[in-house]
Image 1 (cartoon, rainbow, N blue to C red):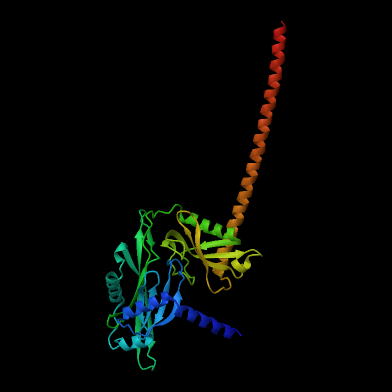
Image 2 (tube, rainbow, N blue to C red):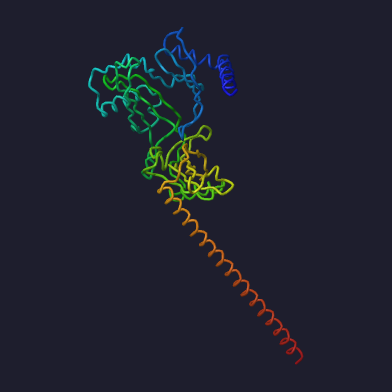
Length: 366
């Protein structure tokens, strides 16, 4: 029964996309890019979700004879193209020596500066990753390396802090033997923030994001960044410029991890000490608003590092609780002292007024 429902949903979705004027327009964009008005173009899927803080996305992805192509539905432009495996193995020149990483970086930077239309809107660019993979042809007779280099812009504020811009990037795919560019893709969001100085310190940001999770129902929360030894340590953290699907561009403090433990009512969402919750999170560096968080996949048992972090956070919370209790006690004690002193002063003033009254009457009868 389930597979029948699944097939029915696929058919309904296929009919809906087939009848969509937006889909027809996007297919025409692909055919124009290929230079073939009769090209066979197959809809693959809709990419409509922002990844981490990479900004809003609304793309249709298509399969063609030789390429996988993405079209931005808002602008109706091709924003990504890459060869499929069969075509790549046909065009790659694997009989040559591999180029060095430095040569590949230079090719990627030059190509992106020429073909990314918004390159000059950003003052600084850097290579953030070099991905390499070895493929084999379908007949297993040929194998070759494939390379993709990712570039990202960044800004530097008046304090000298480097701030990566996560909502824009370029991805250049290269034949690492000949240096030929065989694919290119980009995400783009304009820079609209003029104030790049955060309103509070990183330490305060950590406290704020932890408190935000406590407000949502966690019994304990420990925010972590620059978390070496964790699976998601390569994600950008610290001060960043990024956006979600709906938030708009923000200057933000991003955290590699927020480890959480829930109450008996919220442990399904926030985990337990043995199996804590793990979240990526970011708060607005100007307002302190928690505008992004997502549960990381792969719920697993707490490592020794996890337990140490959570126990340190628990001790800190207990210490803070004791400090708050002592402060409240001192405030209450001080309040009683002030009230008693006020009462004594008022009593003395009353007795003094009575004494002066009788003294005045005695003097008036003389």
